[in-house]
Image 1 (tube, helix red, strand yellow):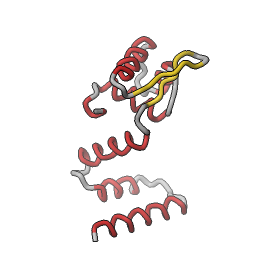
Image 2 (image 1 turned 120 degrees about the horizontal axis):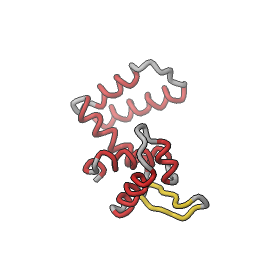
Image 3 (image 1 turned 180 degrees about the vertical axis):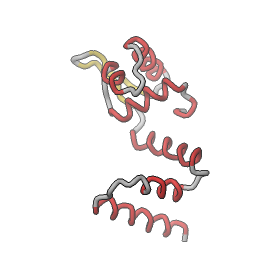
Image 4 (image 1 turned 90 degrees about the horizontal axis):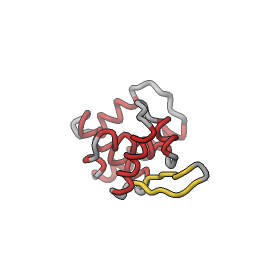
Length: 124
């Protein structure tokens, strides 16, 4: 369902996923291209009506959080990116990510090695 959201709703939803929870003001401040307070509140209300976010009363007003687990949303977003920019090849996407020049910690390198081994075993 997230793929079918209008651009601004999707941007607000993804920002909220990154924050894990937040007020409308926190979401607004985290947007790369900020909207007005009322626009952010309206978009959050639409997302609430669609069942994608929930709200709870907090000391500074409503606190919104995604209903879906962030990992689920991230997996869907990553799959869309792989399909769009890497012709569906997870290996090409992983190679591109590693080519960005960021240094891996030993734990990250070990986790990648395990993931590769698991993927090879599943193919066998």
